[in-house]
Length: 307
Length: 142
Image (spheres, rainbow over the protein chains, first blue to last red):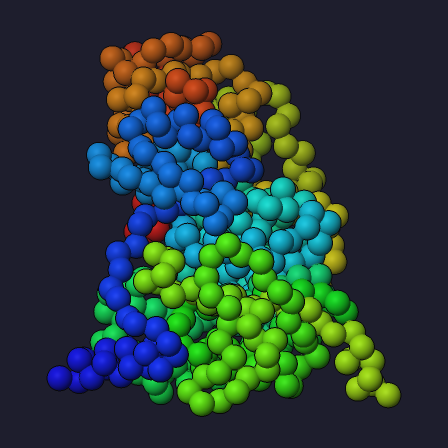
């Protein structure tokens, strides 16, 4: 009985936010690794072994795939690092971050390495990426990903992002793909596992991380905050909190998919700028739930507070 | 241990050991950009390989680097490729071409695209597997 109540509880919340819940089935997807192979060669290789690829229109390097004969997580092309199995929405936060070749970038919560390797790919292995991961058992996957995909511009630390100042440098760009409560599209048992207390606890940790990341940004540095949660406490409410309490302002995200961030949440009116964020509802986008915000560190606010 | 490993295939200098750093039992090639870091990382730059007991386990980068520079290879067909990355030895019927190998030699195993899948020892028209890239999957299961 409790399980149904949980699902009903969350579905009612989505209704209050203007959405009618629908179950969806995610299409398997990957990201081609342009450090090792170009799109044309990659398409040829996989076509030859009978794998159908469909370009994901709203990503730069993503493909949906259809493979009936074998698992795409066990073939030579995978082992040689020609692609990374990555959900479609998950590819967006690094595209929004848009790391440049000469920059110093932080990936604050890196494992298992999908976004870290994507950052290196876009930077063409130039510049420097610092990747942090707290949990030792997730480090193996992360190291394997870096090796397999031919990434050589990353320094990896086993570290809680809250202590990232120990690395001793400031960053041009930071990706905070924060630990969150997840969503029903990527976890079929999500409704059984989650409750609002867990969501609120997660939101509190995310605010601590947002503050720390802001401290580590250079002036006019960029922070992309993303979660795979649908819950406003972890998304728009945290962004609104950041705008009130940190020297950050939001930049417009131009994506061809998703809705604007919500500026009214359960009767609370938020800063209008929150609509510059992007929210992906699974039943609209056929992806997992996702949320992205792009902040710039407000130099003027910082100098004002120093007077 | 790295030079000892490389000497199994070639006397040519592939890596200058003075450019290597060691974190734990793992070796990396790093350059000047990492000098800004105040704290020593766990993993950085190009992963070269690691010591495991008395053996050296090469990285994918080192295997590909060797494959680009040396001509001591066994080419295998698709069946042999699949069997090898599932950690099996390569049988005679899967070998499509040999390049400068004789019995007892260490050799790289490459597929039809000249992509290195690992290495082994050439023995009487078969290759005894020592290391293959399927290791990426097996290490995750541990």
